[in-house]
Image: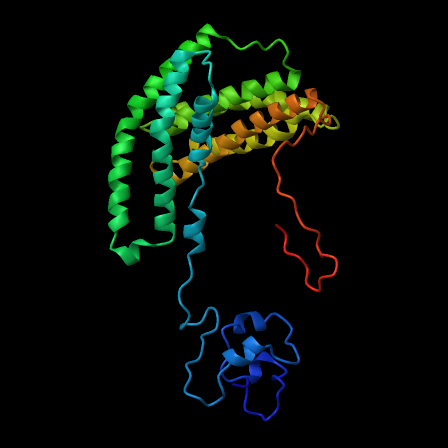
Length: 326
């Protein structure tokens, strides 16, 4: 079918000339029209005056409702599986356990938390994609059962691993003699951030303790800020990777500490956990860069030992079509 019964093979000069826009009409309003329609466009556009239903333009009353941007913005990403898998891999790959009691506790926690974190991810996807509308909440009921049972056991499992970890730390204090100045400052920031996180997730929400945690966290970050100002040209990994995430976490905690406790909703707390994770990850990445530098990597940048997949050139010699990146 032609785009319009004008007797010409050419498409109308403007998008307004057609009486029944195709499914790509919203795009045509912004993109420049071509002189000749493609095969797909010609086939998709019904003849003028035919009984084919018109496709509603974007934003019109006949268009299907899209996802609410405000609702999507409330979805927060907390990478549970990333940290649980690290414990799981470490426990599985260690043959000679240097701390049998701690490693056994970590393995027990990983065996419990990995399936739970997987369920959390699947449940998030289930509700985000609104699959409950097609299965009458069948999977939702399964997720509810698994999550309620899992979180009921979580305090006991956490207490056991926390006890083993505290015992190990007291018996094996970290040697900080080889730490650089920025690394020592960053370590203080991470510890203060972890203390603030415990206040953040405590129930019931204690605003007074939150304000106290903000004061301590701000005092821990201040020396790192000063160091970063004095060493702007050094490309120090802790300055580059810890200072900014720490300030973001501090600002979020400060906002919560000044908010009416009744208005501190779960979404804001989850967002705080995500911001803390960035502080923790930044510190780990900085350490990785320092170790890579010691192994011969570039100063301040570190090595990159990821197994990257090779890519084909943008155009394969002798081929008329560009090769898609692998």
